[in-house]
Every structure is written in structure tokens, then in C-alpha cells.
Length: 112
Length: 397
Picture 1 (spheres, each protein chain N blue to C red):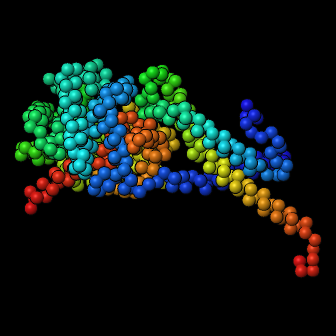
Picture 2: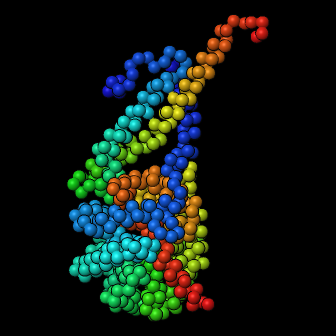
């Protein structure tokens, strides 16, 4: 299922992981967070204080929905920014490596 | 080999990114303290929380839905939600005189309905079910939890504006408690069968103090004697913190609990200001924490081991974060003007309590009506206590 969401092309050919792959995960977590919010699952987090999220649902269902929301929320708030920052760090790293390779392959001159 | 290298690099980069992000996370949720509490007037948070509570009391269907959810877990919360809301509205009436008539109307509605329910269904209606599983030691059976908080509701309403009908009700309730104290062999009254709470005693004494302010009665000796007894017999020796619960023979039941202690320290402010400050400082040192900019509180000091219960709420392992103690810590931090702690607690509230704002009405989804009413109290407390303090200073002069 994940393969349908994420890009199927080879992630990277070099020694570094692909920043794009990390950004795709950050996007996926953000989308998931949007969906659970639109579904109104935030209300069920009252399970955290021992109150049922809804009197029309069973305690177990309400608790599951509340716990699922908390999990997705934490993934969005903690995970997504870390993935975006990681992608930025990797991008910088790749540029530095590329610059190093370019400098090494440059022909030697009198001035060098 | 190439794959392993890539995985290790990815892990390293994720760790670096996490090390950058986690210390910055609180900045997303940090707000100025004035957003939560103001010295004068009402803060935006207070207004939004109050708007939602006032709505609940004008829309019986919404209120019933909220009460059903809470009563399914704990009937006490229904009662305490009423108490905290009345005490908040009484303080709000001083802070926001333009809306005083609306606050008074809601206060009277809550008090009248609470008294009616107590009369029709008996005291067990507002107590947890185990109250009827054993017999009260003192007869006739009464709960200081109900007597104290109802008396404090009546007194708070009268502090905002006198209401003749409530004068005799307050006097009657205070006289009952005074007589009970005199009859009690250990000067301790029950909330549940042979289960007595520091929280309930301090609020009952606050109600007596307010009755003295309003009606010129004098319970100062009783208050003084009770606090002297508590300092001697009801303090945990290792932490120096007041015990949360004990039997009628002053045997400790639950140790010092944050979910009780922060409010106790606030309640003590008008009874014994130095002792109140001492208890808050100890609680702040032994129960309060700020980690990466987020404030929270433990239920017990490091010297006491206890299990999670209905008061502590769920306890998050590793950090030992108690939802109940952290929620009540707002009242302590606000009452003692501890701005750094209050600011960090407010950041945690916005991060982990899932605020939901709709049409200027605020609620915290991870909380419930009683929790939100306690937050509202933390945003508004002060004016009623200051009136009593002002009288004391005037008397001293």
C-alpha cells in the first residue's frame, strides 16, 4: 500500500539516503493528521482523563479512536518536522559532497 | 554494504534533526502569560473558556451530554465542575463588572440546581459509588466534600453580591461543619466513610473564613487550631508536604498528592499565608518540573511511591507526568504568581491537551468539563482572596 503512495523510482544512487523520500514521509504524516482532524477524532482524546469521548460509542472504540489520534498527532508534531529537517541536512550534505567531487576532478593549474 | 551505510547515515541525520527540533518545540506553543492570566480584567483564555461554560448552562442538552460523559467515570466531577465554575464566575464578576449580572444569574442557577439535586437524590448522588459500600464513622453521615464546597459556593456568590436567600443557607452549612468539628474526637471530618481529605478541610475552612468576612462571625480559633493540628499530625515527614487523605484517626491514606496539594496551597493563602507559601515552594521543588520548555507535575514526591488513581489520572512513565497534578498545578502557579512555571504549563496545555476553539469558545479535548472549569479558575482566581486579605490588613492596622 505504501508503494502506491511513495515514489517507486530508485531512492538514491549515491551513498546518501534520498531527501525526497523523507519529505514524502513528512507529507504522508501531515495528510494523515489532516484526515484524523477532519474525521473529528480530536474529541476522543478525552480518554486521556478517563472520560469517554462519546456516550454513543463503546468505551473500547472511543479509547481506540482517542489513542489513534494521539499517535498520529505526535507523529505529525514530532515526526514531520524532524523528517523535513533531516531532508534539509541531507540536501546540504549532498551538495557538499558534490562540490568536493567537482573540486577534485578540476584540472590542476599553475595557481593550484 | 552501501544499503547499511545509507541506513546509518539516515539514522544519524534523524538524530541530529531531532536534537535541533525537540528543544525548539515549546516555542511553537509558548504564549505570553497574559494570554492565560491577567492581574486585572480577563485574559483571552479566560473569556473563551468561560464562554463555553456559560453556553453549557444555557443549553440543557449540551450540558446533559457533557455530564453524562463525566458521570460515566466519576460522579464527583459533576459536582466539582459546578464548584470550580461558581468560584470562577464570582472572581470574574469582580474582574469584569460589565458582565456581572450574567455571571450572577449563572451562579444562582448552578447553586439552586445543586442544592435541589442534593435534597432530592441525597449526598450519594455526587459521590463515587464506593461511598455507599461502607458506613460513615460519625453519625449522622455527612460529607465534608459536599458541605465545604457548597458553603464556599454560597460564600463566593455573596462576596460578589449579597443575596439574602443564601445568607441563612451559608450560616446553616457553616454551623453544621463547626458542630461536627467540635464532636469529632480527632478534629477531622469524613468526605467518604472513614476517608478524610486535606482538600476538603481547607476549602471548608475557607468557607468559614468567608462567612466571618460576610456575617461578622468568628471562626478564627477553630481555623487556627485545625491548622496547628494539621502541621503536627498531617504532614509527611520526609517531604514536608501535607498528606492528601487520612482516616478519622489521622492515619495517612494516600501520602502527599499533587492533584490535591496545589489547590490546598491556594486554599491556605487566606488561612495561613506563610504556611501556604511554604507548601507551594515545597510542591514546586518536589512535584513541579520544566523539561525542554514544557511544564508538568508529578503526583507524588520522589520519597513516596503510589499507584495511579482517579485523582492522579493516567501517569506517563519515565517523566512520571500526572495529568491530575499537572492540571491542578495551574492553580498553584497562578495563585503564587509563579510566571515561569505558569508559562511552561500553558505551553504543555496547548501541546498536549488538544485545544478546540469554535466561535470564540474554547475547550480542551483531552480534558473534561471539570478540568476546563479548574483551568478557568486558575485564569480568574485572586479577587475574592484579595478582599479577605484587605480586610485582614485593615483589621491589623
